[in-house]
Image (cartoon, rainbow, N blue to C red; front, side, top):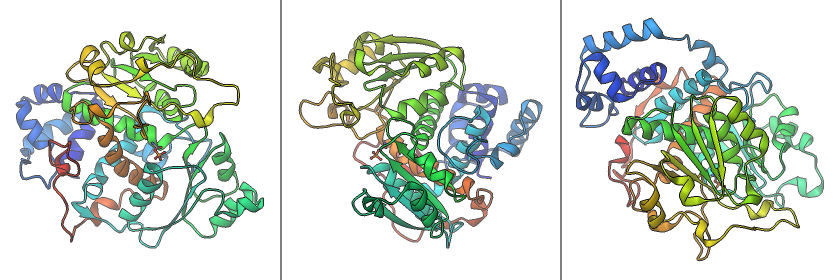
Length: 423
Ligand code: CP
């Protein structure tokens, strides 16, 4: 197992920050940081064997057996082999999946290749617009060695001729080894799953859920918090915008609820508040929940600001955007006035960047607190982990890695301060 994966897994299981682990094993934070770099980084240092034995000893005394959760990567006994919702995940099963995502990082970051899904076919069915989810699921499957066939929109599928979800799903089961579905109606992806034993992944069902997005969001929070020496337990998370229809928020609040003592601030116009059952779910799990329409007041002291787009396409005919004024935009001036130096600014994207839109402003593009492209980059490793675990090849990845044969850019975007490989 790569040293980085071993140490990140140890910190997750022990719920230790980097400072706490460094202190416990008696090394400097700087030394630990150099051990935590990927094997491919020139700055990476090998940890001494005695330090590794010490970490193993601490784990042995406190560790849980994670073997079972790898066997049930969706964490969901009801839906079996499918990933339809985040319901059913436990903290251990989520962390086991995110550990597999760590193993995928050298492939996701184009330092290594693998062919563990060679010969497998993914059917990518998107009946609603998408850029990230559709392309990153395709890219993740291809980077595991598989191939992808797809259909986009109702117009180019025989559903336009009245074919049922049941028939469509059963037919595609004969063509593909995994099925990813996005559909505008809540519950429609579950209907696909009921007609097949091929694994079905919910890529967003109307205002319902978007489990893979929530998993990559949590993974991003964990990775960034690790760098900042913070834990998710005890954090202050502020959700902003359309909390009524924002399916990524619905899934992420449930995953966050698996943690301890969160302060969750829900900031939205009165007409777009988080559904009551999710507010109650957070409160029932011991978290402190505040609901407000005051954006600057709600952002104060937040460790994470999770902004969302207003999903006008989901509004019922009579619904209006009452209370959503221009003051509702998250921009550089507001972030500087209300957030700390280490607040993470997140958004599932897409954001509406047209003039007059009250979405996350582009004037934050070069602010180091902005984590939106870390989220999209992390989506590849997390979606690879989902495929590998659903198809049962997660244990083969490590031994299958080969060097890449093409030239890879050191930085992917103009905002990056650290080489992509080392992030
Ligand atoms: N976050 C997300 O679901 O983006 P797309 O709609 O582009 O897939």
